[in-house]
View 1 (cartoon, rainbow, N blue to C red):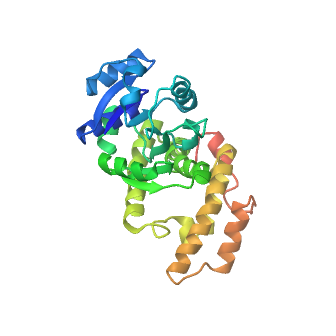
View 2 (view 1 turned 180 degrees about the vertical axis):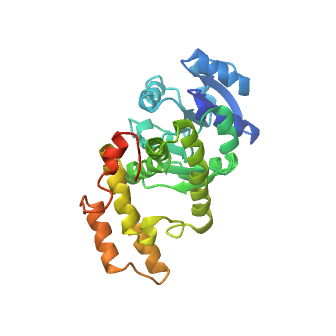
View 3 (view 1 turned 90 degrees about the vertical axis):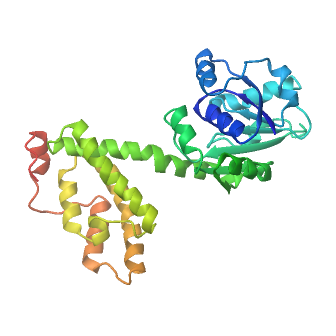
Length: 307
């Protein structure tokens, strides 16, 4: 099949390279950024040409611009009548629906959202990770999209267009929020006396081990830790020590963890002792109990950090 790329960011460049390797023919490329085009040429030697010289001949048009420019890029093609019957217009955004590509329903092209469920630091990393990555697909050309994903070495999944925000929110929580959680954990390690760089180095193997457990035994069995054990005393001691600005996140995640932990207990033929469950719910909902760790926050403020 013949294709072209509008927008030569990390994802667009990597997809173009992998499609050419799979036997697709790249007819042309267009981008406003000289810098991204120079980077594109390092991986794929294709000339920058006017849209009218290649778009009408392509079977697939990838619009891999920034999300906010996808609609306007597609509208530009439609307004200039740069299309052919049956052509497929594709974007790779996780948040935008495929229909953003076709403002006029009568336009004789098919639309496809083809989002890699992956995070790419740069083009080199994207080229390594695309094969084996999962893709979320929705739009009028899902069947064709499935074949494209297979050709990229990926694994396709059909999406309900109306559920796209939920799908993207799940992707954000599993990717972006891990970074935010790592930052919070580093702050706590730092308060305990470990420098931030060493803290991150210490936490990464722990996070990698958790991901391996998820891959090996899945949910909810991969869950470990004090809430999974029903250890309310440990959770109480955490809440006595954690700075106020991090307590809301700890409690919110703790409530979700408690639900998951109960599912794990039930799956393993066990259940929480009633008293521990009541105490955990009380603590994670914002309750406070008297204990022997009342001085912990003051100790943190004075940088003694004795819990």
